[in-house]
Length: 209
Image (cartoon, rainbow, N blue to C red; front, side):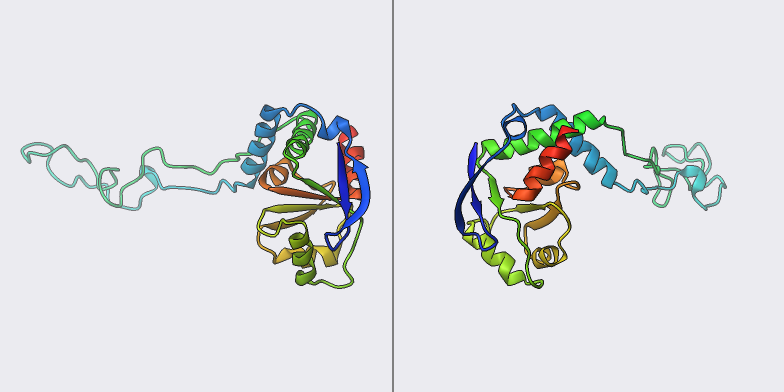
């Protein structure tokens, strides 16, 4: 698949680049994508949720009323979960939600996510560029020229470029990342994928390992 190469202003350079068929042309494995996104979201959870159970409530254990003759159910303690302020039954406990996923599955998931974007014609390639200084206006103008200002965009660079990162940081729905840090979640969450030519080569090298 051939795509047009744009410059940092979003203008057509007249050049074209062929997207690697072994990455952008495969049949996407949706289950691998699901597993990788699930792992990513699970790893974001702190798992510090906690509710006090009956044994942890600081209340009197005195029997609050006689067992029979009241016309109501038996109640042994104010700590009972049926009373306001009582312990919670089967409340959440701190736990680790993360789980292991094989590297080959994660790699397949990223390739599949890239293939999904390519099949939907949501991949744009940019010449390697940088900004002389952090300037949000320049980043917005680039997105406008690419007709992507109102879409969720993901810009993939070969390495961290401070000026570009700072320029896109305050732009709504825009995210900037690098080829070795991009995740399947980022790829699937974006409506439009922007890749620099060097990042495209870097992605190919990383995913071949």
